[in-house]
Image (cartoon, rainbow, N blue to C red):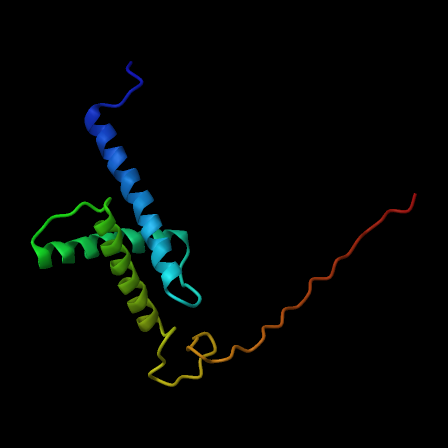
Length: 132
């Protein structure tokens, strides 16, 4: 039994790892450029980066009629702009920037609005000792 994969399978794995790594870098760069707290975790950053690269490079291809690879400096810039736009729309639609309804929901955060301090109860620590 051969311990190595076929060249087709290896090419697919290399492409998958390239998109995951590059998508993560682009997502982190877009989150670093956008000020404020960022919604979403690692998986959201990864998906936002990959989607941003696809959208950014796709728009570049439509405008300039020139196909570019995401692993270039132009691809990095286009992907970062695409991920930045996705993050901006996510914040707009999630109510993190604008609050059109004027709701008093304390879970929503509007820019410039002060947060109320959260008071948490302390857990009591009990220690049980057995007397000898």
